[in-house]
Structures are given as structure tokens and as C-alpha cells.
Amino acid sequence: MTQSRSLQRRPLGRTALTLPKLGFGAAPIGNLYRPLSEAQALATVAKALDEGIDYFDTAPHYGFGLSEQRLGSALAGRPLTLSSKVGRTLEPLESQASDQVRFGFAGGANFTPVFDYRYEAVQRQLDESARRLGRLPDIVYAHDLGPVTHGAQDGAYWQQFCTGGYRALVERKVSGDIKAIGLGVNEIGVCERALAELDLDVLLLAGRYTLLEQEALTSLLPECEARGVSVVIGGAFNSGVLATGVQVPGPHYYNYEPAPASVIKRVAALEAVCTEFAVPLPAAALQFPAAHPAVVSVIAGCASAAEVGQARAWMDEPIPAGFWATLKSRGLLSAQAPCPAGVL
Image (cartoon, rainbow, N blue to C red):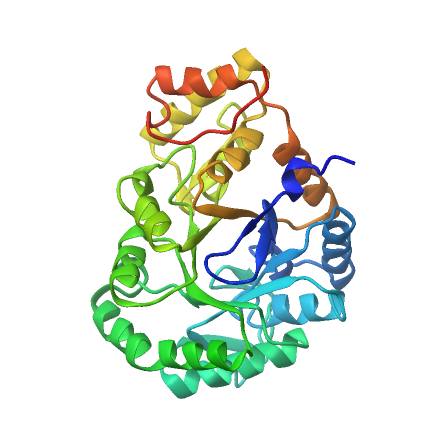
């Protein structure tokens, strides 16, 4: 039986791991933006397993432990690949948290996240993740380093990680407790800094290599190829605008904010080509980054079984080769961008 395209696997860097082209992003089951019942969260994960998806990415930040806890329950005893993150310590709240949205999560666990990339903190964060997940993750990303997140404190947190948390991750990898280490960020610059200073296996880059953004082609992705560092792509829909398009009523979100007019105009142009070739815009958005040879997986955040099935269908959608050529000819895609082979 021919393997579905979305289940094709690529090796991760210089490790023994392989990842499927389509992975599961578990932020939504941590109550991202809205509460999700336990039953719905578990049904969403079950659907991913039914679809053959066996790479799940989470973080302590997602629902302040809730996403990890739910994955731990849903995936107990199953042979698959898990990734989680370090960099935030979950501190107990003195009073019971309400259902209000905190840091983007609604009605999460009764903790608040505090940035801490020190050696002892990262060791503790890993142990706490293992307790919630029922096992240590296979891949561990240092979460949200960089000036966009940390502003004037960027340098201090970077040094904290390089002299502390990074050493903790290397020790865990050398001992065999975890299999791969990297960064989980939404900034190109901090990835390039990491490649110059650290020995990493993988980068999880969110929102910076998409149908709307290809700056990573200039130096980051070639450098990853040269160094044997793999890339996992998150945020392929750029916070939603490439999932919904702009032909439906707004607001339309890009980078977690209302999309500027320039983005609205560009998405409308992408949609026009999609209409010409009868290609769903979200299918193109998911498949495009997966075509780069440095990219091993594209993770899609899903909040329901229906969303899992839709993501799988989009990743398997046949797209004509002429579609990609037309995007390039109209200046909507970098001429240097690797594209899916497409169907004739």
C-alpha cells in the first residue's frame, strides 16, 4: 500500500528520530483562547492517532501544564514522538484561577508561568513535564528566546540559557534521557545566533517560513542544511489569515494581531490563484513549507477531531504543479523557494 504523503517521514538532524510530514500542535488542547472540555481534548488526540499522526508537540506554557497533562492521559503507553519545551517555571497561584484568558489560555491550570532558563530551573522543568506527560519528551526546545519576547532582557536570558539551561539539556541528551535538543521560537535572528554558538539538532520555527514569509530562505535554512540541523515549522497559517483567507468577514489575524492592509492585499492575491487552480488556501499553506529539504515536519494546532481530519486532508490535497509556478511568476512566492512537486 502506498504511504499517504502526510505520513512520509524524514530523519531529524543527526539523531535516530524520524518525524512525519504532519505533526500535532497541542496548544489548543491547553485551552488556547477558549476552554476545551476534557472529553473534546481527548477525542482530538484520539483522532490524530487514528489518522496515523505520531508526533505531538506541547509545552508547559500551554494551559500552564494542562496540555501536557491531557497528552499524558491520551498517549499513555503508546510508541510515538513527543516534544515539549523549557524556559518557563510554573509557579502556583495563591488564589484559584478563573476562566479568564491568561497569556492566551482560558481556564488553564492554577499556575502562572515565570521565565527561567537557569540550569537548576530547566532540570526541574523537565522533571515536572515528565510527571505530567508520564515520560520525558523525546525532543526538548528552549521556548521563546529572543528580543521580540524579552526586549531589553534578551541578552540576560540568552546568557542564562547558554551558561545554564543549555548545559542541562546537553547532559540529559548525553545520558539518553532525551533524544534531541533545540529552540522553539518565532524569530529568525535568535535561530541564527543559536546556530553560531550552540550545537543543536532541531529548530521549531513558528510563523517565519510560510506562504507570506520567506526571509528564512536567505541564510537560516541554507545554514541549517549545511550544519545538519532540522527544522520543524509551526504557525503555517500565520495566526489564522492563511486558514480563513480574507474573503470571509473579519477580523483577520496575522502574527496574533489584526492583519495590516498589506497582508490583506497579499492574501487576497494568493486566494485569486487558489481559485484559478481550485486549490484550498490552507492546503497550500500547509504543504508549502514541508517542501524545503531542511524541514522535517509541519505541526498543525487542532482543537477538535474535525480539525485534525481537515488538516490531514489539506496536507494530502493534490495541488497542480502549475499552481506553484504561477505564484512565483506573479511575485507571490520567492523564486528560490522549493515547492512541492505537484500533480500534472
